[in-house]
Image (cartoon, rainbow, N blue to C red; front, side, top):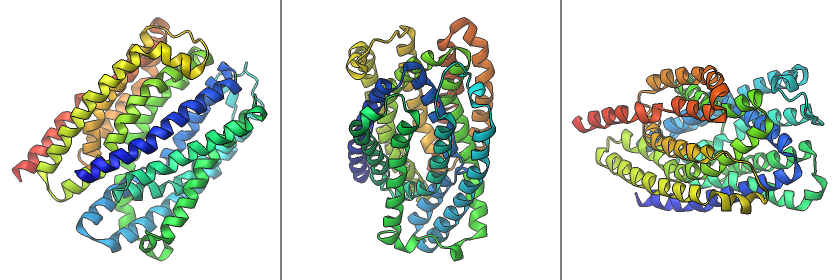
Length: 431
């Protein structure tokens, strides 16, 4: 438990820096782009970032299997696991490049996103860059899964933190040359994190993780089947969650307009701070749950739950303070006036608190690989209903209709996951 507390402190340092840097990057980006183009940019960036989930969940699958092997001291199995994971993900990245780049070149992007009336130079170049960088990051970001499985979450966070800080420094240095240039801006925002992740991967496999260095001869077909079976379930769950949480930008852009996307996105990012903070607390617990479950340590798991629920309550109170301070915070952050409907901040605050509570139980179930098939069925059903339900509610409730749909689609964590977690704990106690 003391190690978890130390990890959380390191995570707060790294993620706190990342969070502040991201907020400054957003503020600078809004200065460089018009509100409409910013709305388009954030939607494009969010949409292409979905490719990062096309590792078929192998990162999370490897994380769980690695943690179990680590708990029982099987280093040779982890060597085969790492090699198998990297070889499969390399193949996936190549397929995404082969399919994604021609699609970007030939598809009617402007019509798809309903942005034909907004002039954006080099739109296809921007999308091509995002496809290339995101596809290659599938490979370099596997090192994060190893750090997390090895219960070193701070190292994983430092990669993203360093990348965003580098982007921020470059934005400050080159700000005058970036006005209105979406392509140059996308270069500065995307490349640093990828380059740092690549360098860390090379360094890690030539130093501390030399014995785990990927090798073709260590590819194991039996492990690949087990990895893909577990990973695919994580992939579909994550993809559904991604559609639920980030598909709202596309729906608003398509049915209402780019300016509304900007307002929604900024308020969402503001309250997503408490989700980010709570994720810092949660992050070490995934592998902690895996390790404790593998060792059948019921009391340790129960203690972990108590700590997380107390943390959830405290962070929810922080969210309430943020809601009260929102007008002042936005004035300092963006240095411009935005027309924000009164219902939007309170509804997104409640959504963030709601999501955090569900995440406690979802992390436990994912960490122990329990009831993944049931979770998959529920989340897929909710994700499938997101678009039609939003389209039905939008004419009457506007953006609030999308928020209502997000509540419904994200309700698995609060309605089902607590009961399933209780069943797992009860079974462990009886054993």
